[in-house]
Amino acid sequence: MVTLVGGGPGADGLITVDGLLALQRADVVVADRLGPLDLLAQLGPHVEIVDAAKNPRGSAMPQDKINDLLIEHALAGREVVRFKGGDPFVFGRGHEELEACAAAGVPTRVVPGVSSAFAGPAAIGVPVTHRGATHGVTVVSGHLPPDHPNSLVDWSAVARSGTTIVVLMGVATLPAIADVLRAGGLPATTPAAVVADAGGRAQREARGTLATIAGTAADAGIAPPAIAVIGAVAALSTPRPAEGGASA
Ligand code: SAH
Image (cartoon, rainbow, N blue to C red; front, side, top):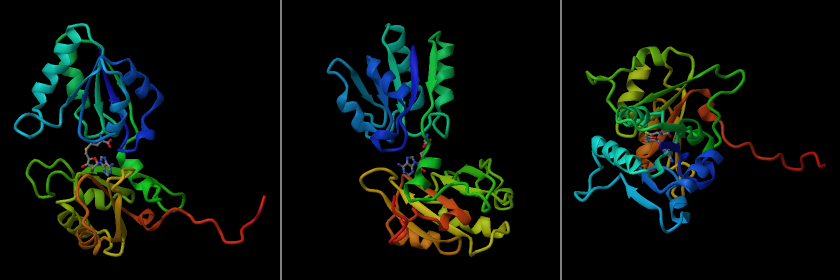
């Protein structure tokens, strides 16, 4: 059996109970770069941990090599966990891996995780929806620049959606994304925030508007992994207890 486990973004405590149980039962864990990797140090000495973020040449392990590895271990009778950051079905290639396993006759299961799309904004006190401010949230990949021929995102429709916009993998493309959203009709004054390494030890954030966020993020040294959140909610932060507030 191959169990695809979403570990949540960075912080150890955001994995689900089911996910942690699956990890504890594993003989082999094939782990990605994002997610709560500290948890792997707590597994027994018999557990084989494969770092799929690295190969001898220093680049990421190719996807078919990862698929082959999962299949090989599972067919040898081992309990395999494929460990990913966030939720494995949110820009995680999770379903591709399950399809490859199934095609090789290996049974699979998925344990969803807390996605950085929601936990990232929450880490800086930003709710992705807020009554009276937004009735939805659109989660998009910023991996490809908006004008890229392979981009599947209709950015002007996103601009007109009236929803909060959450962009993953959009650090390098943030200036172009901000431009295309403004061209699509989103006001330049729309609040925007960016959080990097959400929940991790190096968490950083930048705040601004659609007009300024690319600059403030660059000034703040924001680097991947980072989430951008655009919309009225991006002006919110963790509420402070009122001074001299009501006592119990
Ligand atoms: N499956 C993951 C997303 C994988 S795509 C999930 O559901 O969270 C990788 C992107 O996720 C990164 O480029 C970044 O945009 C985002 N991301 C993942 N972990 C993050 C973290 N701790 N802080 C900020 N962004 C994160």
